[in-house]
Image (tube, rainbow, N blue to C red; front, side, top):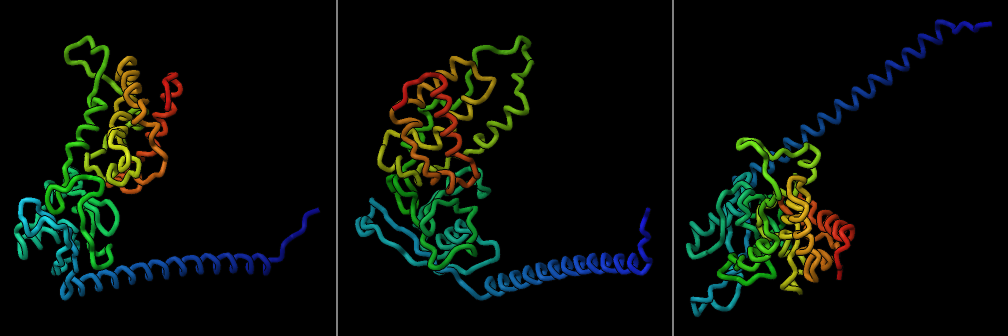
Length: 293
C-alpha cells in the first residue's frame, strides 16, 4: 500500500532546497567579493608603499685587501622601494647609488643560475627570488654561513664544487644504442622519479644550511648526494656504474652522516625533496649489501 505525499509538503521541500541553494550561491559570491576586496586593498597598500617608502638593509661588509675594511661590519642602506622589488634589485640599487665597492654575485636574475644565494634574515635564500615585501625590517643580508668569505657577500665555492665533482655528476652507461641516431630511451615513470633531482642549480643553499656539513668538512652534502641520486636512479645508467655510485655514497662521510633534519629541504629554492632522496639512497645501499657506518 503506497502513501501519497501531499502536494503542499512537496512544494515546501522544493522551496527549502531552492532556498538552501540560493544561500550557498550567495555565500560563494560574498567570499569572492571579499577576496577581490582584499586583493585590491593589498595592491593599494603596495602602490602606496612603492610611492613613498624605503627599505632598510643591513648588509655585511668585509674586504681583506683594504686595511680599514678587514674588520667585518654591517653597513646600512635605505633603498627606495618599487613594487616587485627583490633583494637582488635592492643590492644593485645600493651598489649603483651608494657604494660601488659593494660586492655580490648575480647573473641570470631568473632563479636558474644559483649564483646569488645569500643569508637573508636568518635563512638561505636566492636574492633574485626573494621579495622585499615578504621580509621584516631591517633586512639583514649576509654571505652564506659555513663558507669562507672572499669579499662582502661573496663566498669561496671551491669546496662545494669539489664535493659535487666527487660523485661523478655525469651520465655513464655500459652500452649505447645500435643505431647511430637511436636514442637512449627512458620510461615516463623513471623520468618522473628523477625529475625533481634534475632541478638543482648548484647554489649551495642546502650545503650552507646543513649542520652536519658545518661540522664535517668531508661530508659530501645534500647537493652532491642529490646529484648522485639523479644518475643512480636513472634506468639508462649501467648497473656496475650504479654500484660504483653507491660505493661512493656509502662511505663514512656519505649518506650515513645525514641526520634527517630536513634543513636542506626547507631552504632549497627549487623545492627538491633532498632529504627524501638521501633516505632512498640509504635504502638502496642496504639492499646492495654495502657497508654502512
